[in-house]
Amino acid sequence: MPTPTLLQSIAITLIQCVLVVLFVFVVVPLTVFAERKVLGHIQQRLGSTRVASGHIGVTGWMNRGMWKWGRIPVLSYWRGIPGLVADVLKLILKEDIIPAKADKFVFFIAPAISMVSAVVVFAAISFVPGTFFIFPAWFPGLGGLPVSGGIADINVGLLWILGVASVGVYGIVLAGWASNSKYPLLGGLRSAAQMVSYEVPLAISLLAPVVLTGSLNFGEMAQRMATGTSAWGLVPQVFGFLIYLTCGFAETNRLPFDMPEAENELVAGFHTEYSGMKFGFFYLAEYINMTVVSALAAGFFLGGSWLLPFGLQGLVNQLLPADAWIAGPHAIFFVAKIIFLLFTYIWVRGTIPRYRYDQVMSVAWKYLIPLALVNLLLAAFVRCAV
Image (tube, rainbow, N blue to C red; front, side):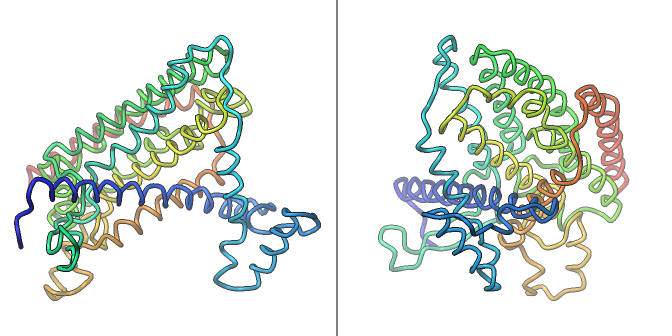
């Protein structure tokens, strides 16, 4: 395999960045669409599951078309997609309003902070170890060169992920403050307290895989957690996963922890004064952060690009032939786990009501932090014992 030159390396890196961005901006709108469909079924309400057809004009034509889609097995799932397209167009075309007494620069930069910090985290996430694919020989300039399964395979990947992801809270806090309005300010303050509080047990829960594997590299950690830990490591992995997932709901401001938004208490919270694509950036950042949390859970606890979670893949591989397809890593496994966890987000939103703010903070400080510390000690004991 030829060694790439500097220009070829830069080109391959840019291609990897484009692939990751395409993945993010395909998964996010599909998650928004799936959320409407799943919530419509869970709560048995009209929406993207069924559409009335008594309208006239373009809306009536779309509704009647979607009603006919429902008779076709494959197309029935996509009934309601014009509503998502209409919402996207509405965000793009809607008037961008800035409050007269807002801090205009901070008001403008806050959505960008949330959006950029959410996307940049994917730089250290490995979708599959090693080579993702090789350019065919006929490809101009890059023929025969490999493309790795992650943008940056760095040794301190977990530190990068936690450090960049924590910047997102600044976007929410600054948005609440810069709006110069009471409800956004309350939402921003709530977010600052909630996200900072839940970052502590979230980081501690992610330290358990670090202790069990002895690595901060995302790819190495995922591989060792899937195939290299002992059977006793199953216990701290399961408890760590449950703690991490709970903290992930709070970090992404999703029900039952959506305190910074809380429509029936704060109108819409920190983004009350935002409209158009500035609001759209906050909306996208929330769903991208959900994807990030799901990717970390899939990589650190559920086996990453290997099929089985919680270290069970290593036990099963002893019974399988070395060249068995399910014995190796595949990006499809990793993406499938992300999709399942995104469904779990939607499932919880349609099932569990919002907590009170004091209950949210009590869960973090009184329960999750002590449990995360106990789980970390248990992981250290397993590592030393074996």
